[in-house]
Amino acid sequence: MSPSELVDIHSTDPSPPGSPSARVWAGVSSLALGAAIIVTTEFTPVGFLPDVSRDLNVSLGTAGLMVLVPGLSAAVAAPMVIVGAGRLDRRLLIVVLSVLVLVSNGVAAVAPNFGVVVMARVFLGVAIGGFWAVVPPLGFRLAGPQAGTRATSIILAGLSVGTVVGLPAGQFFGNLIGWRLTFAASAALAALIGIGQLMVLPRIPTTGRMTFGHLGEVFRVPIARTILIAGDVAATGQFAASTFVTPFLLQNAEMSSGFATLLFVAYGLAGVLGTLAGPPWWSATAC
Image (cartoon, rainbow, N blue to C red; front, side, top):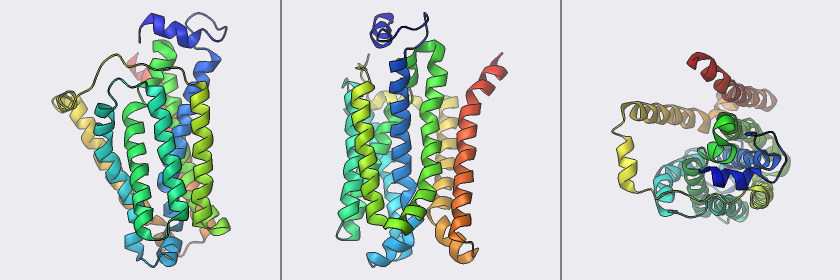
């Protein structure tokens, strides 16, 4: 981002020179909330897979597609969104992705059969892929080079917050109000977050156009290739472990639902602490 673009974003609030304004941090927070609702929506079904299996007359393994399909859809959608969006204002793109989360949850809440639920989860996968392809670099675009690392860590902390909320919320609210109303509540939250993003995010124009050729060049960089492979392995392990963790804990390990919820919360909190502790550690080791 050029200095002239940064002035437009930062000038709405009196701040020390070089310090991002309150509106900038509001925009960063809206992206963190967007990350949180996306991850919450992604993992919420883990807590009520047995209920969906029973209500829609599908096996537990088939019900697990509610977690698998968004991940696969995201992998396909991510490069397509980043290339297809072209020079589209990133603010508008982010709001559109929030609308997709809203639609996914709304359709799942009223789905008459499991096939419709799966289609709704495809919409979520597109939102996931697009969001994580576009949003992480925006921390530096919004907050500038001095506060960019902090802004990015706040955005990424939304991922762990979503994990904290998503896994236990699916089980808790699934038991309390049912899985359909849980999806409906997630749709309402996505709507509120999308409205907030529309209100507080500035225009975020792009400075260039990404092509599939550019994406292919990433694999020629050894460190980037290593990071991508490590990320794939980590994501595969997470999905494999988390998808059926609820029935395993309740049926095989014979844990109470309350204790399982506490384990999910502890897992997510560890992720939040790791995300927030990362930037200071990087700074210390780089000195």
